[in-house]
Length: 266
Image (cartoon, rainbow, N blue to C red; front, top):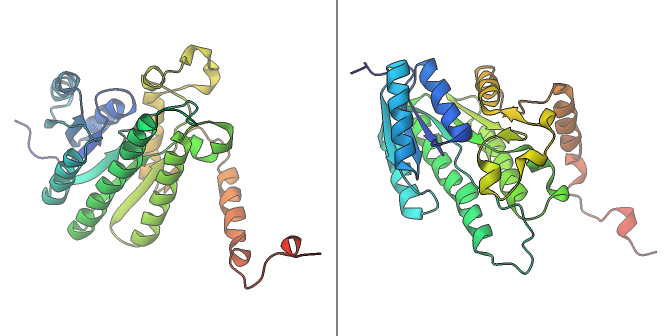
């Protein structure tokens, strides 16, 4: 049996495939012990066996459906009570990229429960527990579609915009303390996401599609660098900084005692 990791235990949700599986692999190689969370026990067990053999790290499998409130609460309780946990990667999510007006609302509401409600509950558990322990990091997987809601249909982009804004707010509350917070905004990534969302990835330009391995390596490097927002494919960081500066420049005019001139009666 391996000795406990000096880096602590990383909890990775949605760990059975894609970005979550890749986080588990790379974090184990970095020296973290792991708790792997997803619905598919067989896949989790296979991954855990692979990681134990390859890295010698301790890997626990925790099957859970994070679309169910009671299972989210059970995981939150584990994060809050286990002092060995030092990292949470909130990766579990789903997408329903289709028109929603007049359609069955159930898939959209299920997506909001997973992408927003579960992520929020687990983030709060981690942020509070890590603050008490004096160490820890929270990584929330958002998406570049947070910037592109007016080009898409459905609510997926809205859920990811929430993840971005919520992570920024958490950082504002926690800055200067021992807890690191990061939102990762992947672009198109080669995973099973497209099949599950009913999309044909083969119709997308190959030069827009990043491997999960490159994405996660970049995201972890961004975490090492202390980035709050990591956009792995963005070459010119100045564009993000300019966007943030333009947003903040709105501040003095967002709340005044009279309407703008264009809204006044002639």
